[in-house]
Amino acid sequence: MELSTQHTEKKERIVIRNAAFKQMLLEIRKAVNGKDARICKVLLAILAGGHILLEDIPGVGKTTLALALSRTLSLTTKRIQFTPDVLPSDVTGFTLFDQSANAFTFKKGAAFCNLLLADEINRTSSKTQSALLELMEEGAVTIDGVTHPLPSPHIVIATQNPITCVGTQKLPESQLDRFLIRLTLGYPDENSEIALLMARQGHNPLDDIQPAADARTIERMRREVEAVYVSDVIYRYIVALTNATRNHPHIRLGISPRGSLALMQMAKACAYAQGRDYLLPDDVIYVCSDVFCHRLLLRNQMDETRKPEQIVREILDKVPVPEPEH
Image (tube, rainbow, N blue to C red):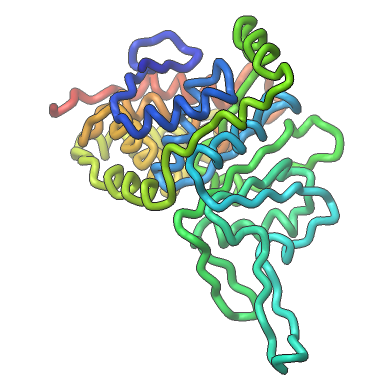
C-alpha cells in the first residue's frame, strides 16, 4: 500500500508494509474517503505516543475521522463538545463532599478514557483549554493537590475550525506545542465525494468498521516504535532542521527541543509502518511539515506570501540530507 502527500517528490512517499498498521488504515478508510495520507499520519502520531490536532473548515470529516479511529482501535472513548460554558472541571474532574461517607470523593471528568475527542477546542475559554496542558504532557491530572493517572494509552484528538470562523479564539503556543502533529483534511476530490454520497444512502459507514486493535496492541506497537534505531547522522539531521528554524529571518519563534523529540518519534513511527527497524532521512522529511508548522511563530503573521508550510519546505531544501548508513 503506497501513500503520498500532496507533493509529488519521491522522498515524500511511503509504502506501508506493517500488517497491523495496514489493517487499521483499511478499517478507517471505510468511513473516510480519499484521505489515506492523513489517516496514515494520524495513526503514526498515535504509535509515536502523541496527540493530534485536526484543523479545517466545518464539514470536511474531522469528527468522522476521530470516531472512525476510536472504533478501529477499540479504545474507551469520550467526546466533549467545547463551548464557552465548558469548565475545566468538566475535562479533568473535581472533588465532592460525600455526606454518606463523610469524606471528599473524586469525580472523574471526560479526560479519563483512552481516546478523548476534544471537538472544536478553540470554541471554549482559554482557562478550559489550559486544563488539557497537564494531562496531554504528563498523562495525569492534579486536583486539590492529588495527582490522578489517566488510562494508558491516552490520546487526545482535538478538532478546531480556522481562527477566522465566528466564535473561535486562538490556541496559545504552549497548547499547540502539546500536539505532536497538526493536520488539515481539505476538500475531497470529485471521485471521493461521489463515493461519500453513495455510501451515505440510508447507511452510516461508521457501522461497517471492525476493531483492528486494542489498548494492548497499541502499547505493544509503541514499544516496537521506540526500539527503532536512530543513527548519529539522523540525530544531527534532526537538530540541523530545528536549528534552521531558530535562525530563519522570517521566524520569530523556532522549534523547541520538544519539537525535535516530536520529529524523531514521528519519523520512527514512519519507519516502523514501512517495516523497518531503523530510521532514514526520508522518514524525517515525510513528517517534518506536520510536526513543525503549528509550532512556528512568524515575524509577520499577516504576510500571505510566507506561510509556515512554505518556510519548512525551504528549510528541507537547504539543509543537506545525510547519506543513510543502511
